[in-house]
Length: 169
Image 1 (tube, rainbow, N blue to C red):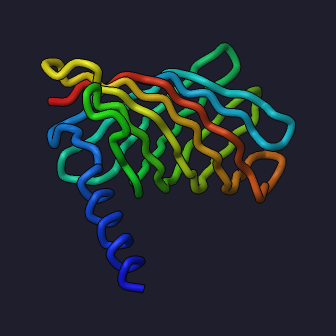
Image 2: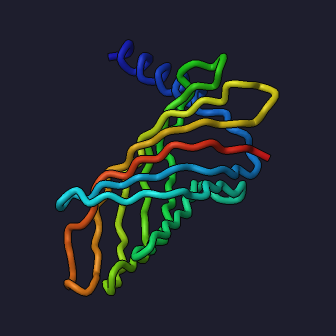
């Protein structure tokens, strides 16, 4: 029993020391986002602003898509539950978090709003010590609600994908 307690204590100490060492300032970048819905696998995508303010533990994504008969704006906010370095020489790590999303979509006379929860899982690398550049990719299953001209939809959601770069100041 003593060995088990010692092993658990040692594992805890080592894992706490392995948390990511991202800079503590502002993180600003761009990313491409793509989403597939659970019902019919309708797809949407676009560019997004990636933002991390030093005062808050939330990673934000602000996305907008414009086409001839389609407009969509959305926001995501994620809190990382686990954020660990796997290879310290190149600051290669992974994260898993919990977050939310909300937005508005308008297409061909149909107007809708959507909101829900997401579970982001991602990888990142900060390959150069002298340049505070982060490259990341993530996948996030989502589940939520939507309301549009067709009515109330629950559950609504799908898979969101993202890949981007972020500079730290």
